Length: 200
Image (cartoon, rainbow, N blue to C red; front, side, top):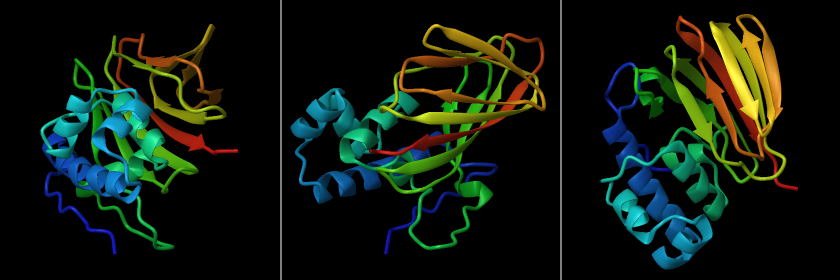
C-alpha cells in the first residue's frame, strides 16, 4: 500500500508539504528502478545536487524539473507529488491538492488529479494574474494538452503558433515542443488543463 503523506494546509498543499511528498516518492521510485543518483541525474538531465536536495525535502522543484525526473523514472508527475493512487476510485481532498507553480503576481497551477505513469493523464487548474507567463519545455513525443477557459483570455504559444482562447472556449495543443501560457489581459485568467501523455 502506498504511503500517504498527510498534508494539512488549506485550500491546498503548500510548498513544504509538496517537497516532503517528493522526497519520499522520488527516493522510493529511484530505488525501485535501481538507479543511482548519478544515473538518474544523467537520464533526467538535471544536476545530482538538485536530486540530493529533492530527496532531502529541501528543494522546491519547478514543474519542468518534476516533468524531467518523472519521465526519466517512467512515472507521472502525479506519482511523485502523491496525488495518483491505484484504487479504482480514490478521493483527493482539497487539502491534499498540490500547488506546483506560483506566479510572480500570485497566480497558481494546481495538479488536481493524475493517473500513474508512464502512460498518464493529469488534470490541472490554473489561475494567472494579468501579465503572468509560464514557459514550458517540450514534453515527450505525442503529448497533448486540452484547455478550457473559465474566466479571462488565455494566450497559448506552441512552437511558432499562437492562439487566444476566450472564456467559455476550449483548445487542444500538441505540446512536444516548447510552449507557453500567458495572461495578456487586465483581469484574472482561470482555466483547466488536461495533459495526456501516451507512450507508443
